[in-house]
Image 1 (cartoon, rainbow, N blue to C red):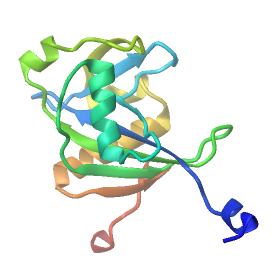
Image 2 (image 1 turned 90 degrees about the vertical axis):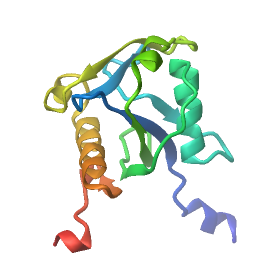
Image 3 (image 1 turned 90 degrees about the horizontal axis):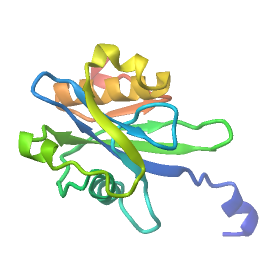
Amino acid sequence: MTTDETSAIATPHVAAGALFVNHEGHVLLVRPTYKQHWDIPGGYVEPGESPRDACVREVREELGLDISVGPMLVVDWAPADNEGDKLLFIFDGGMLTIEQERAIRFLDGELAEWRHVDVDAMATHVPARLDRRIRAAVTARDQGHAAYAEHGVAVPRLVDR
């Protein structure tokens, strides 16, 4: 492959996060110290690291929890102005126990607080496209299958058409 050919290949930033819910189905959100909005636990994938491994690492670094994540719920192609192409994965983190919630510690200084938020109130905490992505992940979890999304909007499955 020539340099011109490789420069024409997409090189998106890749990030992975975990969808944790409580017994009421409310989503665990975290408030980063470096953003103006809430988010789910997670972060960027490092070179040579799988999205799943990055999700587990980020949860450990951000919340101080050693967890294993379940299946991928959604992958979202979500390019952003001034940030370029992005592929964003959300994995099923399941439901944290009361003991795990009590053990949450902000070890790396990136987070200020956490809370559970009802899906219907998500838009007051997160940007619109993250709201759509989280909703797509919740739906995928409820329906038992992964979803592909673009800009947070799940693309209908062929069997759904």
